[in-house]
Image 1 (spheres, rainbow, N blue to C red):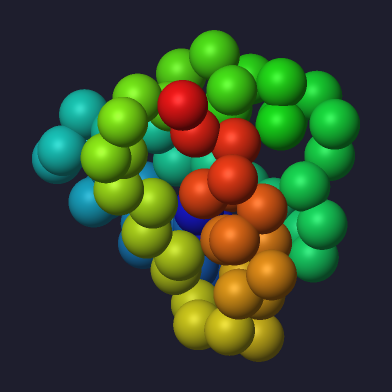
Image 2: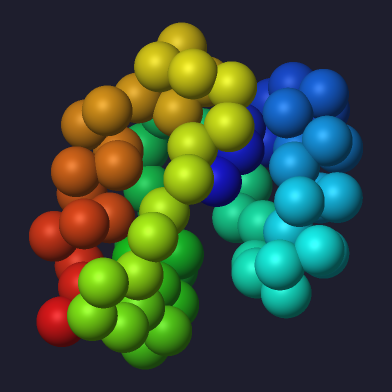
Length: 71
């Protein structure tokens, strides 16, 4: 995950995502309902979510929301 409001995190994160065949999800400070629905369909048990850009870019509360979406 990276903020969609600052291109640097997403740009460098795209390289990591491509190398690991993982999606790069751009987000803001909250998780839009459509993204929550998408994540509910693709998250598997023990899915690792990596936040790029630190707490200021992807808040811990947002990561906790995503962890709660998993199976």
